[in-house]
Image 1 (cartoon, rainbow over the protein chains, first blue to last red):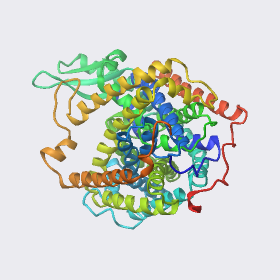
Image 2 (cartoon, each protein chain N blue to C red):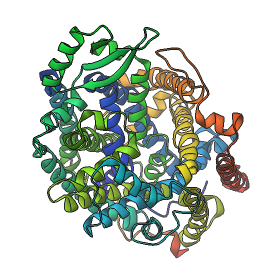
Image 3 (cartoon, chains in turn red, brown):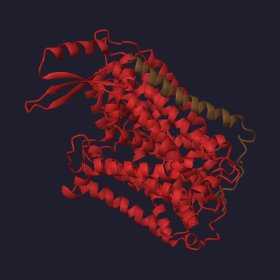
Image 4 (tube, chains in turn blue, orange):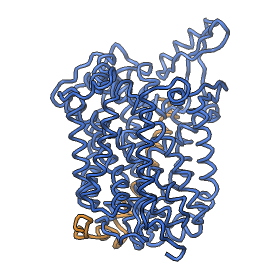
Length: 572
Length: 48
């Protein structure tokens, strides 16, 4: 047995808000709308909600259950909890992933958090004036040092350095204060504030109307249509080889009528109506929807399992897990889905927004939108402050598994674990910030740790729950102290459907993102991440992998040394 | 936005809002389920 539990949550609402805060992040407001629009609102939402029921919620409940059960044995980190649950020594090393993932993600997430704070400050002081997206892109590039390694280290108002130091300190001050006085207290204020700010921005966005009368198709309605219309109208042209090539999507009905008239007179242009069934047959849509659910709910991050380990047998986890997941969904679908794209389309039109990635939408398009909006300084500040708050509640959750692991494995107190983890993450964060050219270090970490290893950890977790611990025992443990019951059908789902669905999605993700397989054309080419390592070796990519390897080796060594992980017998 | 777009949006936003409302209602109304888990007076590792 490890040390008896020392820390705990102060209230049930607090733990729900902390878990919801961990899940609500930039992805809710930036990644989700982009994904939904790209894959056709209605069809995407069908796959999205199905993924929520088949993998999101089941893995959430599995993590809450395993975490609390491990906590009863006195363990608060994944290595200890996996070892305690399975009684198989190898699993403690697999559990290291549950510490590695949040710690490595923190190293670059705090950098992005600093962008949000920097943008909020620059908006409120009135320094954000952009006539077009190119200007806001240039600002972003300079702010984060995208052009040259080392150029992000400045400490001016328009450089990321000072904000990075502030958010880094803020995170560690809060984490030092502990679970209830730090994380819980902050989330209790931050989450309601976040909701209020989001609703204020939502009201502003929905009342934008048609800001540029010379561009009558740039309306909130068309922005909502771009996001939510279940079918798409795509203009395609025929290339010299006779292949139809996608040009752009049309949402506005008047523009659609004009395009159809033009297509009727042309042999090399057509308007293709993409139906819901056609979109649902696209494997990429399922991959996107499942991936969004997965990353949005923070499953497989090693966070929920640590948070729930501080609960007792009498504390409910079924309703708490559902409440935290539903809060995340509300922020994502109910707020993120109504704010981001309508605002962007109203100022830039569908063509100016389509295909923008998370960073492009958030730090290039939206700053330009706010800069050109009435009271844009205020609303720009509010939006980026909202992202900042969402990011802090997430980054705090990324530190707790590391803190719990160091305290548990090295038998040190919180002060010592905070100092040690701050040193480790400061090195990693400094590395990410220094190698800012093309955000290569950040991108490499995000791909291999923030995506690949999360899939691995989630798969391991649901297999442990359903097959190693056993779904019957898992349900029995989940229902201890439960306020509501998990429907019985979820026994079947968690044992068979979730692992199979997850493995299928993981296989598709690997085929698509590692081997570069295009599911529609069948073409394949290694992804840039693989090329960076093995085909055209990139120094920064390899240094990043070396850093990750170093942290992994350190955590594995600490795990190896801990006698508590060795002494367990089936009777413990 | 098309009519079907409105329907999808209302159903999606309505579903997540209803789920959250139900959860908040249950969390706040089930007896002995709020502000009772533990207290701030719990010992923390700093005191070791």
